Length: 244
Image (tube, helix red, strand yellow):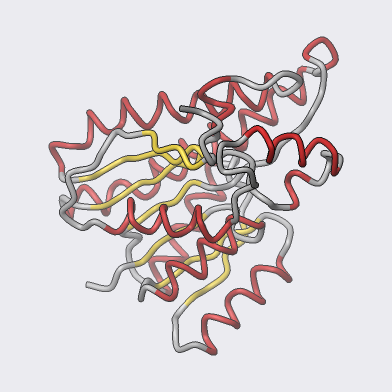
């Protein structure tokens, strides 16, 4: 059976690196995007040119019916999803006292409710096969918290809790659930930070630099790709030593 991975939020920095890594490893790739169709189509074309197979799929993952429709479309075009990478997300820097209820809700709708919907939609096929892999992309801020990013930190911490509990529940069914917790990665998500702030974060790392999206993607491929692996329920940091 072909390996088919659904990568949510695949039109951004880490997402595009995930698409490339899984595609080069022989996976059929469902490239999810919400608004940036151009980036998703460019990634699909690049994989097709290299001999891979990929499709683009649009959905607002906080909407349960859109997620169900997306999974049905993927199954029609590529087959059942065997691997799920919950990568969709966004960041926002704001004082806690200034966070609106709408901003709080949106943060959890994308990071947590979106992962919930995608997991539930992908699970029936995995349960029938008694195998599969789910990888949630959290953040080191979900582990240690970030000042002026309380709602982001809280949502990413929720993904860690989801990972651990779901791994216990699904392990007997042969389905592994793991979590990556990236540190400061050089992507557009950090474009709101000044050059000085980024330089300070790089200097604070024992390795003295920011991470690259491709480094996250390689680790994600390792964790997701062990068909009969013994790694589940783990939160694996990739942060240059900022969290030890």
